[in-house]
Length: 273
Length: 273
DNA sequence: AACACAAATTCCATAAAATGGGACAAATTG
DNA sequence: CAATTTGTCCCATTTTATGGAATTTGTGTT
Image (cartoon, rainbow over all chains, first blue to last red; front, side):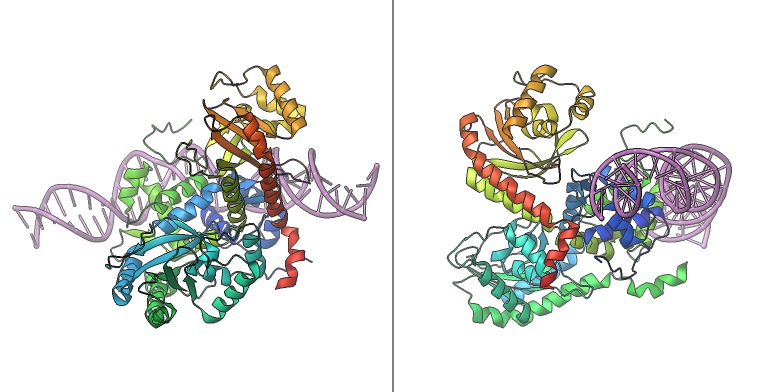
């Protein structure tokens, strides 16, 4: 009843290592606990094989098991691996260039963000040269409910997933503008989804206004936000909207950088085998 | 037996799969292109072995090579894997939020623990903002007999199971307060079971006092501990007991998160699609 | 262009690990 | 308490990994 499998089963891969990576991808997409049997149904792999794979992942700290011994969830080492990967992404160089150009274009500080651990993680940031500016470090974190990027990440989640995250996350008021009422936040998120961009109008830091968009991802959810952050002294909603085209152009450029690495151009590589 | 690796090779792992994951961690930390030879120097693995590993990662799209054929960088599939991992990590996100709020409430560092491999594993930790504090990393481990969470895990075990674990484990004395006598430890565990909470009164680190409870699990044993850790300079047993209600409330919140994240709980949430 | 040099790649016999059907155990259900 | 589901173990067979040595490829030098 619960599982009507669209038979995407058959973990593809020619070697054990590649099959393990494919398994990791399935696990990565889980936002709930999962069981051995559930994975068998989903992947079509034989039970002893899967059992061994999960055992290896568990004993390396990539997964952990609940006390009942049958429910698995992601371990801290796996999480750390993912964060390290994103923080040290080599394409950061290329993205950094886009960011620099955007800052040059709009004259305000900009940053690239990702969702991590239910919070917004600053992957990269370029400061404006204007003397008055907020200083925020790459690597630092900000709550989802009071940041422009965060609201965009929330807006693309399935309702159940979003609720699970927000239910236990206090809507802490950082300023008088912070949305602390769940219904108001939900309405804002609906607006954000419709518009495709989000504001943070002094909801986190007094005097700081942001506008953000996501770098579109053709394969589904995006984990890359792009935002302009400026003091209200120089910025308001209308001025921010005027920057939107430049922001979207930059987001598209970043999406292209990501897309460049797709194995679409495999035709070239097919000759040398 | 066959290969006595002289500590030069720092890629730990008992199986090829685990070695591959360790390699991925090294790669994850690279913010530049890397070469096969560079990896050989860094990991100590034989060149043909590493060559094969990188080849597999490349042909699965996890890595890609530059045109020169000798510089590797992270591929789109690896990036997508990391993003997917973090985007679907609502359990950790929600638990972290509970932890943050608890820290805010009691004003001291708190952590979430699990029993893993006969030791207490720190799953997550949030530091107090007070300047004087112990710095303990998530992912580190502590013996069961001298930690508050550990004694709780022991207290819910069947006597035979507990004895089997403790018999193999020396009751190392870390401080003058560490319980090194089996009978004294057994008596303490009995007290812990009756009370439903546990202290660690400078039994592991001098000057560190902890109080912990378990996140209740209706289906049986719990593998989630929640603890407050504070310097004795600011904390004593009475003050710790005053925090107990807040601690138990947070533990209940974490138990709820776990309950909602069970695969079967999807039926309830099916209404909002 | 011929050379030296370093890095990448291939070879291959041996050792190690994965595989998965089946047996078994443990927990869950009716 | 029997029936069923789910996790774990066993083990003969197949597949894959291993790494020293040899070979090829590419770079830099005089």
